[in-house]
Image (tube, rainbow, N blue to C red; front, side):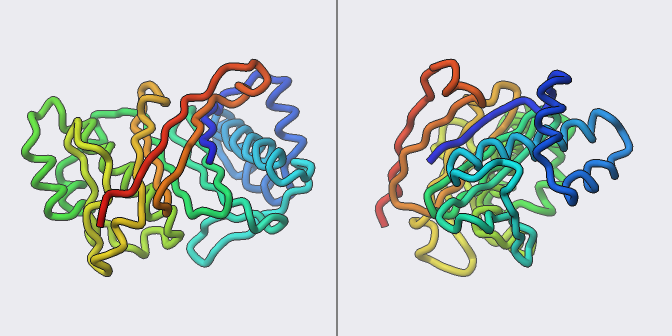
Length: 243
């Protein structure tokens, strides 16, 4: 499994190249953005997604076709064996690509204004709120976003979006405690089917998380373009906790 990280800010030549890959529908969506920066970042994000997936599907990037689940999760229509997920925040984007394994990814640029305890009370489980409040105030902003990205990655991997109440499952958020799905309200056994991983080390200035429905997985995290430059990806292996 691969996770690609990239910047959404591109030079003019690269922006033109990526723009040329987009479908009519994607160009229409880009045109709806009021501000040039937001429009360009959308173009770069979609163009990079097409470029990355084209290498796996062995189909020209401009020819890729996308479908969407009832909850809005995108999928490739031309290759059912390749699953992917995308997340972006400000100028950062992550693209996770897996060999037919459910996957979700989320990234949030660190911003202390987002760490609102009222938001936590509304969207976090009771256990997560208790864990957050147990921390010193200085540690809460990062812990809040760690929790948020892990929860978002999980619901994105499941493909149900916010139809799945965020309060109905618990994840770890205490610094130093491995990222783990602890509980789901609908199943006593499902938590051991999932792996969570903190990708923040790979995204400086961000909180980021990956969720995978697998007992064991090896993941390569790499910057977009690293294959061309020969830089080595960081590898890690995860194992599901014992039932």
